[in-house]
Length: 429
Image (tube, rainbow, N blue to C red; front, side, top):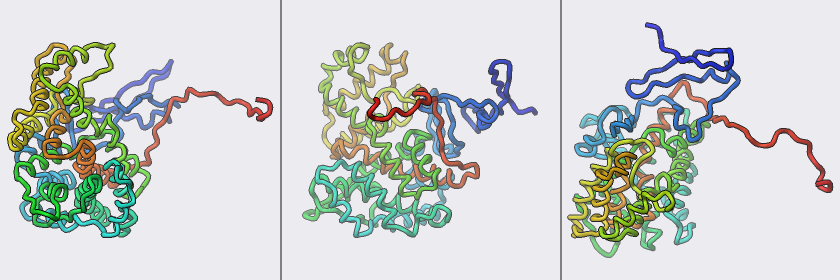
């Protein structure tokens, strides 16, 4: 069977490029020889039509509203699995056996403590520093504390670095939170689950015992799972681009943290919660919906629509159910913010304006409500997102490092500046 090709015509010349098929999803036109053949580049701002790599980790079908980790539906994983089991799946490609899971859990649990000298690093930040600013600095500084896992040519060191980051990121995030509220750092506990340990480090204090509620621990575990990976988004692409230069793994993940900090990426759930609070009550919704439809009004409804999903975000359904469980537990079943969220969701699914534009609720719509109900300030939302996404970044980084086709990233440009001109001495300008 003859392989399919794409033909490009420029003037009176034609060029052929192979079409490559994946296991599922759109085919791609392999244009690696485009410049060599034609002397031209493609122009694709935002890389919205460009596949920068091949990957076997995560697949999204935006039209169907489908998200798969290694072929498994996010709905099933969120319902039946745990975050650490999903971490194993993303890193190694298959769900673990009982023995494999026990070993993996032990390896992660035994790496949760930070080097004690890193406490001084935290204390070097201003008291009002944003948790994401602290995480950017601390994650990058891990390369200064863990020299024995920075050689990317050594598979064993890559594995150790991966375990350390997955294990220590909750400790780093919790310490950033404690520092911001002026409370003492709480050390991790090996007898708690991954999510329960994080909640314990965030909310326990030396003065009294703190028992982690299993419903809250399960809610956090689901949030971690739903944010674990999301294909070649901005922060993941940043990690891959950083890694393409053979930078150490801690520097690459720190770059991902920095990219995620942007409000257009990881800060969306914070913006959504602020919007729901601004609306205030269900009675105010019609006015805000009217403003959202008005092209002349700068107001925009946050938490609706997605760059990739052109259908209902599959993660939003799980978040909706989890939000109800958490709010019922916390005794805020009459919470006005949730009421506003539910009414807005109903409008978005029924109103012709939103349906035509496929502005369905996304995962950020509910995750902010859950984190707020648990007790996290909005400044921690993106830090928790970064903690959740770390395993996805690492899986993508490891896949790239092992790829025989790996090259240092070098995007091209369409230059439209001044052409060559003579230098004019300062006194003659």
